[in-house]
Image 1: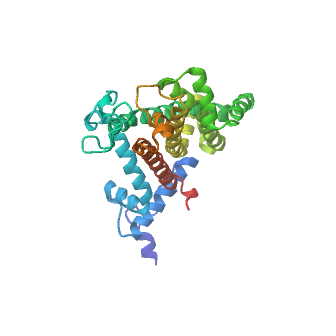
Image 2: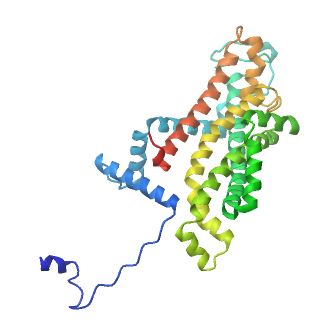
Image 3: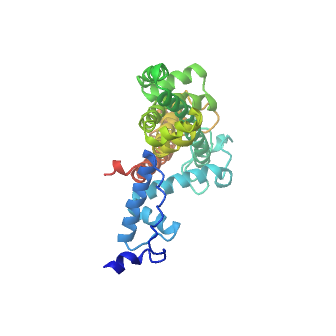
Length: 332
């Protein structure tokens, strides 16, 4: 018994106590959440007989666990690659008018047929992915950046600053996303930058409230008090300690909002307040053909509708999987 107790410290001189181990650094709430998620997945990897010896094994295991999330990632990857290589994928110029081929049915020459101006529908859908991706990423990034700044400032400073920001957020959130985007687009005018701004503004209060809630919880933790005690500035504490601990919910929220922004842009274009002609937009392609050609040329409605549905569906699937991985408390 005595030998077993001394076995671990047999290298120390007799009578000399072992040196104390340094206390581990205290983690914030966001770090604890990520740490618990890592432990959870490591246990599941071991149960499945797949020790985490490499990044690819972990990716494959997560793909098997979240099949729908992996499907969403595949759809979004295909969506992004299509937008990047649209010039190489499209067989025709999406803006070229050929009246002799107007309303041609799908064929080997035109895989998805042509519209009333003789423009190739497949090429317009491929190039339309660029607009949807630009609006989705641009509005999410713009609204997210402003929302993070507002949320950090509101949650960390509190007081009258928090009161003012929250009342403005209440006003913005009183209107639905599409209605507020319609008002902003009508005021700014139909163009790509204006559509991005119009969709980004309604996203600000949603992001700011998420960041504010995390900031209010984090600023009372001991490691924030320790940072203040050593003279660290408020801005440095917010950027170095508070902001990194809010990244997990922000990533989930941004991915979920991506599908919503794509759908909102399509709705604005369908109502005539989105991307102006002659640039291809999935929503405008629907609005041009839904009333007049829905029966005589159904491919003008079916293919843009499928493109919108796939993009939104893929973003939602991937966002749900990210939520399960990064925030395990919301699983199931």
